Amino acid sequence: MKLLRRAPALGLAGAVLLAGCGEEPPVATTQTSGPDSRQIQVLVDRGAELALRRDIEAYATTRRVGVSWGSGTADAIVTTVKHGYRIDVVVLRSGAALDRVGDELLAPPEKLGTFRSDTYWACAVDEYGLSFVRFLVGRTSKGMLRQQGFDVSS
Image 1 (cartoon, rainbow, N blue to C red):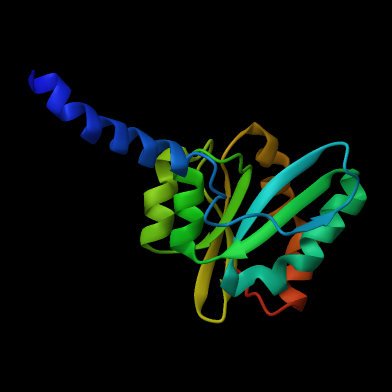
Image 2 (cartoon, rainbow, N blue to C red):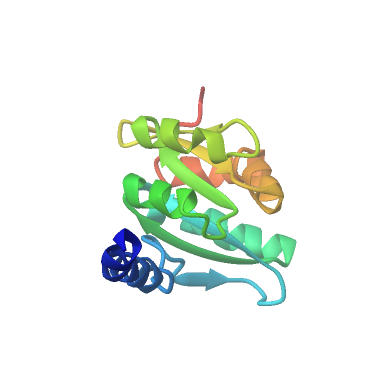
């Protein structure tokens, strides 16, 4: 008898859970560079998006890999990754969000440098993101980052 009284409540809880299944991620990729045949998904902290645009486009051009990217707040990026959406790389500034996403990363974060007094890190979430992170910390990308105002000296 107790089970029958709980049935409406259980049905409502199930409906609420199912309604959330079709939602978009908190941060979605909104821009694409390169070919569509193979793409990596990148989320960038809003504060560094414009500074990283040239690096993303250069990677897509030289590697013949498509890059879909978007930007958002650090908290929204972490929520997107934690909810299991397919993201290959995140770029975050030092702080609580970087700490919270740490257990989702394939490898330790790689320091990009300081931009407008914030230190930014490139983080591979899965194996598809490793080559892009290596590119971002490489000589070519560091030169472009420097031109955009990053201090990459350390």
